[in-house]
Length: 291
Length: 186
Image 1: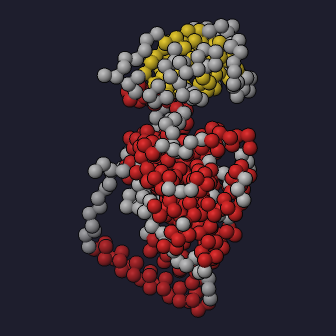
Image 2: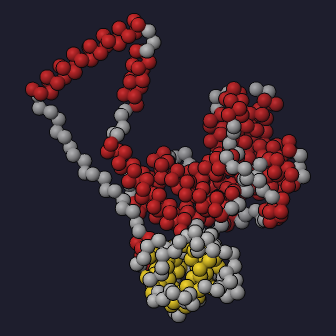
Image 3: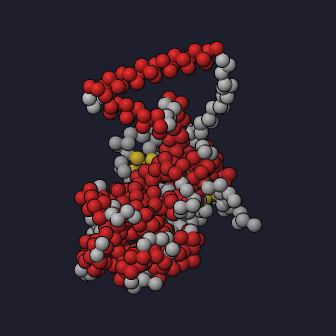
């Protein structure tokens, strides 16, 4: 490989580590591969990953996203366990043998006969095996205990877990707002600056038609002031009774003192006119500072 | 020595999922937001990334890379795939903040992982143009052409800075690679 070819080779590897390659570029790389392209690529990819990590900031992911990921994780584990029960994996030797056998059967008549002959021998072997296993004591079958399937955590349970884990949780109680026809809202809101996460609990908040309007939370805190509260995310209520909803704050909130839920157009708004305030919650006590 | 979180996930330890999110959720979210520059896209991508992480947890081998690097690599692969399959174009207006953004503080990088600290050290030894190209391409997910348009560097120069810069970082971090690559990096 001359200098020019080396440059092209490493250009392709660098591009693969940073952007990925299309089929044509990958074919070009494969054609040039002196045998070490995979190793070279792996180390470049690790270097790129390390550079990505350098600029990671401290902003936690939104609480609602975290809830979705946990739900995905639980669903994935359940699915894995179901698949394990339904289709126990075969060994790679079994797979290889089966594939080769199929190929041979379709490759010619004499191979076909050979296949039949092999099958006949296999049948005889199977018959002998059955006979021997019937007359001889079999190996002890050890029953493995079923794998415990992680249960899907509900939003209410996630709220409880946050309350256990956070040391700076604040809590405020909902009061009904100014929307005609909505009355008797009860529930609370909990928030942790440390976790940048929180949950709202409501009773008597009417189910909404998402095509007509949505609910939106606003957080008044030290950072933003009351004139430009933090968007705490939109949410819909599709069932009456008690609902628990994760907060999806769009900015980092610091020491919130007031929370408000408004009715807004579908999708929510950037700035609320505050015409329809469904519920308000004032924080009356601050968390005790950690010792 | 504590067992790796990914190993615990692979073993079916339910608590490990929460631990994984506590430890790496912010990292993945941060990488995604910087590369995609759109919170909605980043949320979708992060969800996909964590599904990839659950699926690949059993493949983690701590003798090859740290858990943090393994997770960052999974994240980057998914994000690169999303960018390649989208029609994303970064507007010139949104570039000012990117171009002026200070790169990194070593103390912060070290907090994330040893490799991040090593990468920060390696980056400091690069020429400023090489640093800038690596930052815009790897961190911000900008294409060579977008970097050329934004910085005024010729396209070929951008590619050369990317190649030489990344080879140098790899070599300085002691991640292996051939001697050829070091020669090419100088």
